[in-house]
Each structure stands twice: as C-alpha cells, then as structure tokens.
Image 1: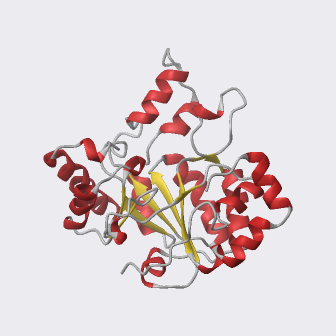
Image 2: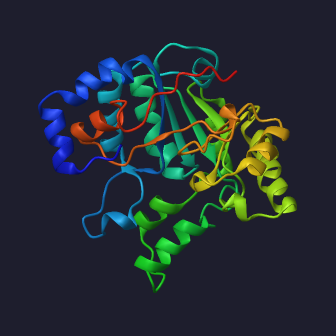
Length: 278
C-alpha cells in the first residue's frame, strides 16, 4: 500500500497507523533498508543529489523505531520468531561508517553493512549510480568536500574496523553494483564470489549475507547466491520465487517524519515478515 503525504498525515493524526501497527506490524519483523548516512544536508544542493540521510535524520528514525520495536541481530532475525527490526545499510559508503556507527552505538542497534567492494581499495572509485549523480550535478568535476562525503566508499581500514565492531555484521553487495539479471554467468559468479572473498579477507568476518543491488534478481540469480554458500539474501520487494531465505523483503527508509515512519511500519505499507528462514 502506497501513501500520499496528505493522506499519511491524516491516517496518522486519527490513529489508524498506530492501531494498524499494534494489530499487524508489531507482531512481525521488518528489515529496514538505508543507504548513505552523511554529516549534514547541503542547502545548496537538491535532495536528489544527496542520496541517503543525514546523521540527524538517522538518529530521529532510530529513536522512533527503538521506542516501538526491538532491534534484532541478523541471527535473531533469521532463527527467531520474536517481533522486531533488523537494520541494513547498502553500498558501504565511508560516510555511513563515520556518521552512522556512533548513532548505532547510541541506540545499541545491530546492523548489517552490505558493502560493494569496487570502491574499498580506492574510495573515490565511485559506484556507477553515484558517478552518474556526480557527473549530473557537478558537470565540470568541481567536487568539494561534501561531494566526496556523499559518494566515497569505505576504505580498507574502515572495513577492518567494521569487521571488529560488535554491532556490525559485514554483508556482500557485489563488486560493482550491477543489475545482476543482466550479467552473464561468469560475471555473475565474479560479482557474487570475488566480492565475498575480498570482504572476508579485509574484515576478518565470515560473510554469510547478501543484498541484491537495486533489488534486482530472478530465480537464477538467487540460486547462484544460494550455491555460493550464503545463508540468506535480501531484496527490496520479494518476487515470491519459492526461495524465501534468498528474497527477504525490506522496507526502504528515506525520510524521518513521524507520519512517514508510522506508515512504513504500520503493516499496511508492507506486511511484516513472519516466516522463519533458517
């Protein structure tokens, strides 16, 4: 179910969203999907040029969520049936580590960092979608400090620190963030397996979880992820291909307003997860 701003606020004001959360949402589990977490929003740039959330917005979200749900570890989410929320952050941006981790620590909230490895050896080797944004909004290549904060990847030192952090589970998000359904078999194998080996070597963690870039997958992609030995894979919307552990749906969170959050986690926007995957 989709919500318009005016309708969402109306449903929130009259208590429908809160009632729905108690009846439906609170009984299940949600996986929240975030991307970059940067220090601040620039008033000089449109929102489209600043994908992700500011640290202040993330703090507002986790305060609201933490007051209504239990934060789950990946293991608790997969093996348990208790209601709660699992946090996931895609792409592996340096700003997410720098600005996001202190907020996770404040709220004692575990999270999976799904890291694309292309930009780990060279943080300014931006992922394709981020490079496209940079070229669109900075056509002369006149990048400033905020540009690099928005798009730089985690470096190897940050990845190693993430691997040693008690709240962070390192997950795989391919090498170059492609549309996996458009990859041939050799490229698919490379994106799924080479990235995992690199992440394990640098982070020191076993990498058991995978997230499909842009939520793009089909049965052959999911089976390749399963055959590579991952325990679970996270999508955006499940395509219901019969492999529930490899198409776990997520709720994308892109704003911090209370009515928006209440709608997203009401159980009306997306049903909570109830199946035990492992």
